[in-house]
Image (cartoon, rainbow over all chains, first blue to last red; front, side):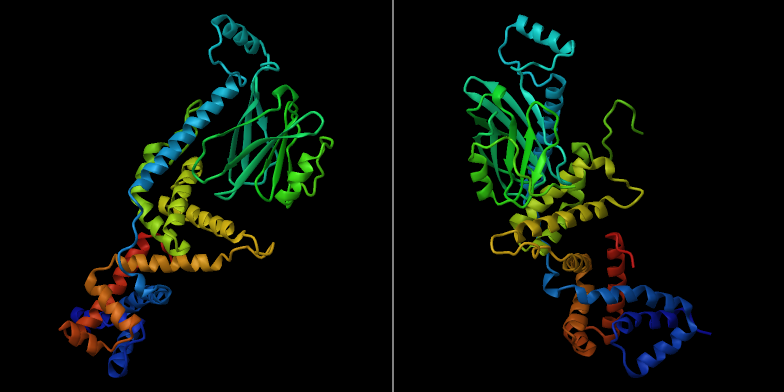
Length: 257
Length: 175
C-alpha cells in the first residue's frame, strides 16, 4: 500500500521524466510507480504536451516583452473616433442626396429641401456620390464629387489596399480625356477622406479613375454601371493610355469575379 | 439583445469596449507582432490595424465561439500576413512568388505563446527550466549553483511545467 507522501515524491519527478532527464534507478523506480498509479500517469500525460512545446521557444526571449508605446492606445481611439465620424458624415450625405449647404440663403435651402423631399436627386449642381462596385474582397472605395467654379472637388475614400499604397486619381471627360486630380497615400488606420480637385467640370465628368499601383478601378459618374477592375496593369502604361484622347471604354485586361 | 432600430454592432462596437480590450490584450498582441515582424514600427501599425478591424467587425465577435483574446490574435495573424504580403510586393520580386508562407507564422505564434508562458513563471521555476532543459546542464551542477538539494531542482522542474501548462491554458492553448 503506497502512502500519499510516497506518491508525492514520485510525482515531483514527473517533470524531469517528461523532459527525458531521469536515468537509472530513479527512472526505473518511477516507471514502476506509474504502472500502479493512475493519478501519476494522468499527471504525466498532462505535462507531455507542455514538454513537446518547449523546443518552440527561444530562451533568449524570456526577458520582459516589449511594450507598446503609451500613445498607441490613444492613436487607435482617435482613428476609430474619426472613422465613426466619417461614417456618420457619409450617412448624412446619403440622406441629403449629397447636397452641399454652405452659406446658401434660407429660401434656397428650403427649395432644395423640397426638391429632395419630393424625390429629386439633387440635380446637376449637386454633389454626386460615386460607387465603385464589384471590388475585390476587402477593398472598398468610394468618392463624392462636388461641383465648383474651378472644376470638381473629389472626396476620395479608399480602404483595404496595402498600407503606404500610392493612389492616383483622374477624372474622365465626355470624350475620354483624362484630367488629373492628384495623388494620395493610403495608410492603415487613417480613414479620413482624401480631398482632391480637378479642372474638369462635374457636369462633364463621366468617370472617376483610381490607380492603386497594380490595379485600376473605374466608376462611372451618373449611371449605375459596375466598376471595372483592370488588374495587373502597370501604372506607367496605364497612365499613358489614360492620357490618350480615346473613347470612354478602357481595355479590360481581366475582370475580377 | 439587439433591438430593431438601434445599432446592430455587437461586442466590440463601442469605443469603450475597444479601450477595455486594448488595456487587456495590447501588450500580448504587440509582443507577438514585434516577434513576428521584427520591427516595432510595423508592429504598432499591425496592432492598430487589428483593433480597428476588430471594431469594424465588432458584431461578428461571438464570445460563445471563443475568447476575445483568441479572436484578436486571429485578426492580428491576418494583419501580419497582409503586412508580409505588402512587404513582399516590391520591385524585383517575381509575380506569384511573393505569397508568404503561413506555416512559419503559426510556428512563430506557438513560439511566442511558449515564451509568454515562460515570462509568467516565477523566477525559480523559469531558472531551473532554462538551466536543465535549454542549457542541458546536469541537475547536480544546477543544484550546487543554486545551493539547493538536487531533489529540489527536480521538483521545481515539475512545478515549473505545471505552471507553464496553466499559463498556456490561460492563453487559450488546447492540446
